[in-house]
Amino acid sequence: MVASPPMADAQQEAETYGTYIAGEWRPATSGETMENRNPANRDEVVGRFASSSAEDVDAAVSAAEEAYRTWRFSSPMSRANILHKAANILEARIPEVGRELTREEGKTLKEGIGETTRAVQILRYYAGEAQQPSGEHYPSVNPHTLLYTSREPLGVVAVVTPWNFPIAIPAWKIAPALAFGNTVVFKPASLTPLTAVRLVEALAEAGLPAGVLNLVTGSAGNVGDPLVRDPRVVAITFTGSNETGAELRRTAAERGAKLQLELGGKNPAIVLADADLEHALGHVVSGSMMSTGQKCTATSRAIVDRRIIDRFTEMLADRIKALKVGDPLDAETQIGPLIDERAADRVAGEVDRAKQAGAELLIGGQRLGNGLERGAFVAPALFGGVDPDSRLGQEELFGPVLGVIPVDSMEEAMTVANQVKFGLSASIFTRDLGRALAFAREIEAGVVHVNSETPGAEPQVPFGGMKGSSSYSREQGKAARDFFTQVKTVYIDPPPPSA
Ligand code: NAP
Image (spheres, rainbow, N blue to C red):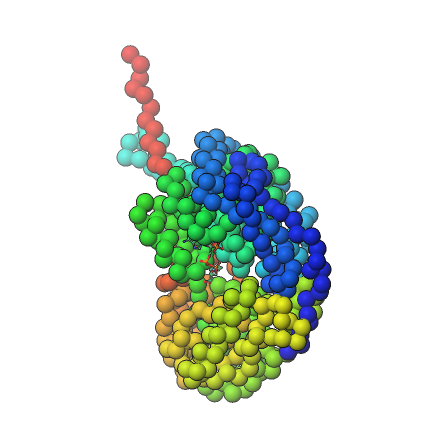
């Protein structure tokens, strides 16, 4: 592993950013701000952001409620035009926004730019979706009755997002919410508010009427909690941890709000003895280590046929050891820091805990020095001979940690793969079509890959998990319409003939 220390544009003057409520950028009512630092170099302040409170949330929800009265009846074509314009504005800014995303989140510049490009594609996709048919015409028992359904918006929607995809996830929630006529109060993760500001700027500049989209930055307790409890917020779309998801389930159930949860994963990659090992290697390493292992769809378990396990594990160790960890703005870097110090210490602690529990650490797992002390860096870790029932085999660690689990057969591989509480994404590497098809049928995961890595979500298809990874709803593609709209059934009979 080669280290490249973060470059020192650290002393730049940090700007202060407000919330966006009722079409205005404004400071938090309290006047307080929170600081956001670069995880690759904690001396660098990326920006200062409004540290909002319940009062700001109240103002944002009021603005969204007011705007909903007209936005819900606006033409879908005009909504599509705004989303198209926002896509164009953001597209012109991809290099800067991608770079800022990297400075605040820590994924590599290539990934930051890739994610921003994805957000542009998502905005365009939902501009198109806004113009798709939205309802059905049915036959009626009465031949004169016009019987149809229409899909109508829900009202004010809370969008609560995590830090690991700070522009793609907000885009794939906000774009369909707006396209289908809802208004939004957006609470981004406290660790990535700058990217949220950039997305909202693009949408605001594209001509969204005041109040249709509101951004409130601040902590989970001061902003997230009052937002999801506000009775005027009829729906909550959330991506984040299972712990927060469990809280939101209770809150939403208590007050009858519509809820969409996308949560954690413990995603398996099965490597069968007939797989092309070089090909599988590339995908397992990329799937487990890119974005520093901080994707909900990251591969965290390689379930490998015992006949090839020694060779494949050696290949994994060599490839992972060679990954270049360092400043994510450096074009050569493959692995950036974790999101913050707390996460880096937590992951290094989990590695120690797994070692103490008897897992065989083959490489990595330690906090890194050598010029990387100012950042949240952890050496990518590989464990061999992992017990599928251990904590390492069961819990999402959300970092660059891969565990190899030996199995004797395809049947055992399937049992191990399914024996977790999560069910987000899964992949298999094999040349056997029959086994690939059996895998696709039997695996308990919402996203299934054959001969490709577990991460990867194209915007035109549904995305979401099974079991503990989701709330049985799906995001993206046409599935978004199901969450962000409700069905109205209309019977229209002609009036009786006049006398
Ligand atoms: P998190 O701690 O649950 O936070 C997610 C968001 O919820 C943040 O904006 C957070 O605010 C807010 N929040 C926390 N507690 C809240 C509460 N009680 N009420 C309202 N809002 C609250 O998750 P994270 O650490 O940011 O994200 C990592 C997790 O997300 C991982 O488990 C990962 O697997 C999962 N994830 C899932 C998917 C998927 O599609 N399935 C995609 C990406 C990530 P603060 O930032 O202010 O704390």
